[in-house]
Each structure stands twice: as C-alpha cells, then as structure tokens.
Image (cartoon, rainbow, N blue to C red; front, side):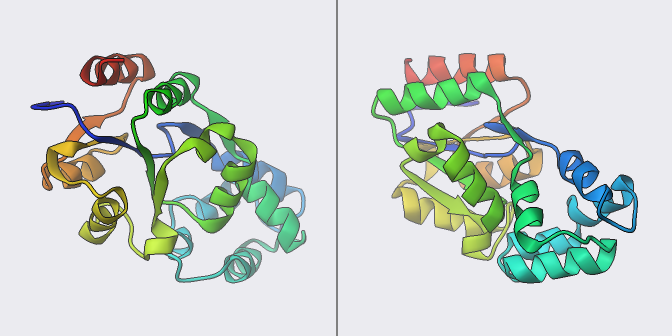
Length: 205
C-alpha cells in the first residue's frame, strides 16, 4: 500500500474479504436430491463458465437453475436451490468491524464484487453490515467482471472518485493489479489482522 494521501472512499471486495463462502455447503445439500455426487455438483457451480454467465447477468435465476438441473439431475424446486445457493456465507468478523468503524467515521464505503443476484439478495437480508455501505458495483448489474476495465470505470462513476482518492481491498492479485493501473491505492487482502492494521493506520482510525 503506497499512500500519498488519505483516501476519500474505501472499496471492498465482498467474497473472501468481508464474507467467507463455501460452495461445498450447497453441493452437499444438493447431493441427496441429485443424480451426481457432491464433487460433481461442485464442479458445475463453482467458478465455471455457467457461473460466469450468471455473474455477468447474461442468464436469469431461472436459466441458471435450469442449467444446473440439466447438469446434475437436481430434483428440488427453484426456490429451494436458490435459498441453498445463497446460504453459503459467513462473516469475516474483523473485516466487518473495520467497515463499521469507517462508516462511523463518515468515510464512504462501497462493495465491488463479482457476484450474482441471488447471493446479493441473501446477503442483503442476512447481514446487517451490508446495508451500511454507501453504494455497490456488482458484476451481474454491470455485465462485466473484474479485472475487466469496464467494471472499474463503473466504480469511479458510482463513487465520484478516481486515482489516489480510492482505497481498494481485494484478495485476488489480478483484480488489485487492475486497480493499480488506474492509480488507485490498493491492498491485497490475505490476513484480516494485517489488513485492519494497515487500513486503520492509513485512515487514522
């Protein structure tokens, strides 16, 4: 993190930064009502071209469900599948506390995530911290995924900031590199204690 001035807004990746997630939870639940194993279900839903299409908004909830059913023989309802698909998250408590501290100090905070409609519906209703964000930039709404430049341009439009005025936290180096190329202040998140320490020092918390 090479800081030349205090950022005006902090941009958080969601998965593996504020919320841990495990598609294995979904796969194990589905397996009892499917024609294939949990391992095969995981191969269908976790970081695949199908998920990419869903997370760029190219297919609807129903189209995603239908494709998963075709691939796995899942016999449950669409509602059941979508509920399970959302219920895979747990808070990363120190990072959620950091976001709360920034909010209380009046620092604008934004979600910047490669994600899908059902995940966000679940997160909005299940985690109070999410509703404290100033705004959000979500891949399925923008029809672009990190590290594509278009979604970074969307962050600059939504926040009204660019360059050193933005601090961006993400766990994936390729996503951070794209922020670096735009002159943002960035930090590759690997350890919550270290991230909280670095951000707190930079922001004067």
